[in-house]
Image 1 (cartoon, rainbow, N blue to C red):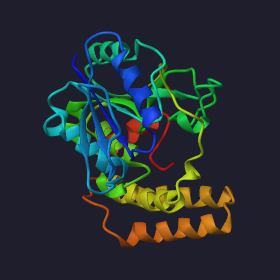
Image 2 (image 1 turned 30 degrees about the horizontal axis):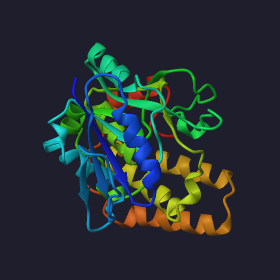
Image 3 (image 1 turned 60 degrees about the horizontal axis):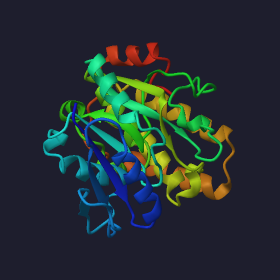
Image 4 (image 1 turned 90 degrees about the vertical axis):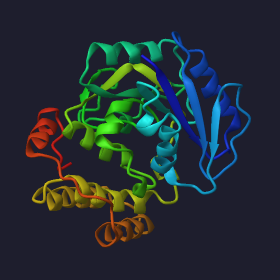
Length: 290
């Protein structure tokens, strides 16, 4: 099974990027072809054989990754599956690519694998990096309903059938948008605790646009993908959860600004999932209202 890897960078972490590229090159089995996308930035020096694409402007995380996908042909058709990896992470184990190949070959309906993210110093996996509601045990692998953006593998056939990542989102929730479309097309998603990406522990709110993008894209996610009766339920639940978390006044102001944008700005094509997909998500432990 032929694997490719897409890595986007802002060009500001050359040492971390080199460590990641070395860990990809050190994987067991056949060589993984790598494309590094400079997202509105120059790509630092990379090893021979690594392809690079430099974009004149920052297209955001999904936009940059989509460019990387197309570097492998339409919808990534030149390879069987693509690894999407954060440029400040690295693969500590050399068997991760082989485990991906084995998992995809063993289950023809497995479309996406999401890795476990662990802090390189402590080995701790943050609760938010376990993509299910019951997240207390990060060492338990399971079927899930979404995946982690910078630590995953996706069949190129999933992208061909479900479409690319939503470039409109720029940052936040683009993975869930693709995950819901993939599940609606009949694919499954696995969280694998034995496939690890080491990544420093961080807070998502470190990004200046975090609160606005999270709110806007929650609304867009619902508008694009949910049956009409579930749209206000999903958005209402997340509004309530946000208020219960008692964010600071500036954060709340930014959140409501994004919430308003979610309703007033175009979000891309609407393709509501089938009700049987709603039931599938519910059986997998996460109904699409939370």
